[in-house]
Image (cartoon, rainbow, N blue to C red; front, side, top):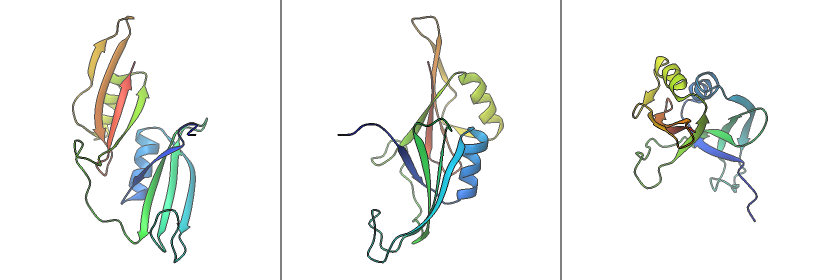
Length: 145
């Protein structure tokens, strides 16, 4: 039986750039790093001899993590599905101030698909939603309220 979430993984090209984005722009912490080399007969990846660098980012108090995976050998082929294609994915973050994070990330040059769509909730609070992209084009989402 599935008991909960552990992590979501993204295969990345430039580990340093991606770690800097998730750490510095989004405020996540680097939780752990690992260098992994599969045996010649393969491992759970199904890629015999795969060598990769893994960096887990998230919040220090636990919960869901994002695993950044850089394949050294064999290198990852280029290409990424667009947001509406089969196989596309995204990661969503809760935020408490959509306007502030939108302004902050925009000032850092982060590409947003659209500005936040803000609405008034039935309880009088404000809610919002928007999509943006990390430096390698992966789609991320922000939700408020």
